[in-house]
Image (tube, rainbow, N blue to C red; front, top):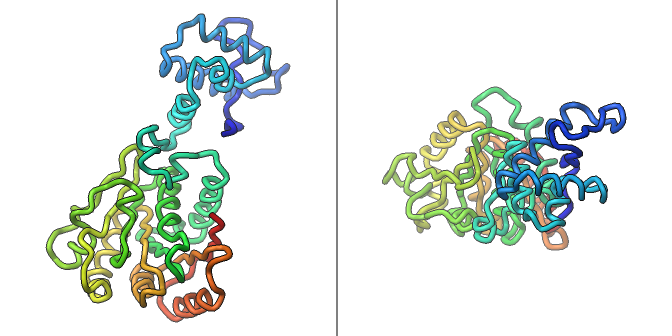
Length: 309
């Protein structure tokens, strides 16, 4: 994995032959950031002053960033560098154990990958088009024509991306036919949306995601025999209004259109929908049918995403 461009070389320890700003072209803020990443890594790996100086010298000689030099010398791991960056710049990064448990969450596992960057770009557009309105904002239903289009994968990762910018974000698993959100986040699925809609429990079925500040999940719970009837009840619309008043962003996963009109009903209650199609797999006719159905509902179509992965 390439190191991020904002990880600069720590050219000198405090008070030891600092290079002037005029010579390097770096700003004072950049030098402060460089020292901070060095201090964080030194604390994480218990590096003494002699090892820090060794890393600095190696970085200067080889033209490397401080983190790259430390990894190259075997004094820290790349995982420690990424964790230090996450602390410095305030974004969530999963532990090695959690990454193994949640391999599909690219924003936590591979924060500098092309996939993670793609989710950041989509997040920026959603923030501008959808989530910039005064509260309560609409919830976003993620819909797709067929099973296997990557709808659940997209819902989970766009929620992670939204949470990483600081807004309280909730993922609601409204796929009452084939729920999988609890599997992606490795959470319990004893109670959830189905329990709330059936009137068995209150809204205390929301679970916080470990290692990710501001991210919460409402799983399905027990898969019901009457999924469409549950989401067509007035209780689902009331629930969506309550959730959007309590969270900055609400992302709702839905069943594929091939299983019925569930996704259309959910989208209408949410107020907005984002369509996900799969490259070289989704049929144009099915996609057109889904978009046409959503166009006739109260839901605003936020866009169409072509999933290449």
